[in-house]
Amino acid sequence: MNIKLLLSDIYWVFWREIKKFLQQKARLMMVVIQPLIWLVLMGNSMSGLTRNPQAAQMLGTGNYLDFMTPGIMIMTALFGGVFGGITIVWDRRTGYLNKMLAAPIYRAAIPLGKLLSIGLQTMLQALIIVIIALFLGVHFKTGVLGIIALLIIAGLFGIIMGGISLSLSSRIKSMETLMAVSNFLTMPLMFTSNAMFPTNAMPGWLKAIAMGNPVSYAVHAMRTISTQGWIWHDILPALAALSGIMILIVALAIRLFSKSVN
Amino acid sequence: MRTIIEAQGLTKVYKGGILAVDNVSFTVNEGEIFGFLGPNGAGKSTTIALLTTLLSPTKGTATINGIDITKHAYQARLELGFVSQDLAVEDALTGYDNLRLQAGFYHLTRTEVHDRIAEVLKMVDLTGRAKDKVETYSGGMRKRLDIACGLIHRPRILFLDEPTLGLDIQTRREIWKYVNTLREKNKMTIFLTTHYMDEADSLCDRIAIIDRGVIKTLDTPSALKEAIKNEVPNPTLDDVFLHYTGKEMREDFTSKEESFKARNNIRRARG
Image (cartoon, rainbow over all chains, first blue to last red; front, side, top):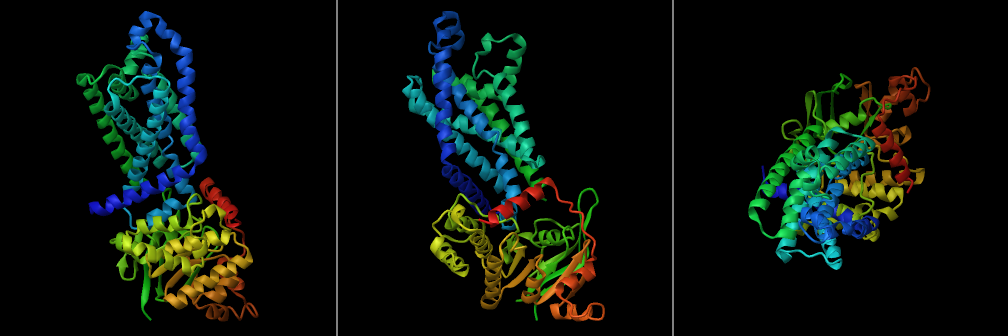
């Protein structure tokens, strides 16, 4: 294997995705508007919670938006990433996939380039959320370094969701089915996590599920960084679990994709 | 004349046991326009997919400029350009960016890229529109850009799968003019499929007719017509085609994917 050629192939697949992403004005608008709506709406309607001292203790912060912002970042990563596989289904339909496959490029470069672009798009979206959150008075305890860490975790999570979606799209050839399966995955993942509600406020069975949900790992690490500080014994295990899951999923996505084009 | 493509017993059995290409052998000479004709579902596209390394054969193999496609797929890909019937260009990008991307996929060096893009743009007369987004192009221009993409790495053999599908007669003539120039000026070998018999007749040096995965006949257009003279007076290539493939209509085994593709192509080809 020639690493230089592999990197070059990954770069060009990535370049195509990013170039297309930047062309879609409506999609870029949504990237800004969606988190804005979530933060303003959820922030306003739920802020009453923190007036209750017991709730404030469960949330671990006196400001619901502080609690909520990492959750919104992950939610955006979740919904953004989970549709990453659609681009493969689309490429297959338009014939562009065959065009790439007829070229002398590494098969693995196609899922890797796409995942990298999903990671970057997720980080960009997360950055926009941070900016909006700053305007709404959200306080990030660990400052700029902490914000960079939040973006990286969001990016990792976007890649995990993108990897799941790419793996599915190697088997599922129809766009409608892939959309249905993706939606089926996202909602339960979101609502059985600690993204919107603190696990302390959950009934026991839900808490058990939430603890095993990878969404919770990501949110927990991010929330610790943004509201508590660099508490490494809380952050590192979550990061390790997340990285492990990412490596497994990316390997699976590459394997299933390579199999599907042979 | 030098042989540039040699298929030896190419066979493809799809999952579920469908025999798409059955022990096909033929050779293509360097510099010729080779027509590959057949009804829908006859095995044309599968044969092209095998020769362009998109599928691997169940049995048999082929060489492209002496390179075995099963053993050295990577090297074989450098020798061939592939323009599918799908009009696979990115509408959201400019013509230039489409070519830039293709140059990246073929690992052209930074210094070559600009000249090479200028070269292929000139070949298909798109120099003036290179900076425009492809969504503003007509169907014929999109097809020309797609062909330019297939030429970026100066392949020795260009595979054109139904290059005139969905185009009007003026645009079809225009596309054929470019194809002919490629052969004459650049000494390129062209392997093409089409449903337009008159076009195949006037353009191709030799024609193979495939049906149900088997090559029924292979010869120059005039020899093909000569051969059935006793049965049909003044035969055209249409008569030759019907002679070898029969007159009954074909069941079209296209999947939902395929029919989506076909509709999408025709819509985009009309610009």
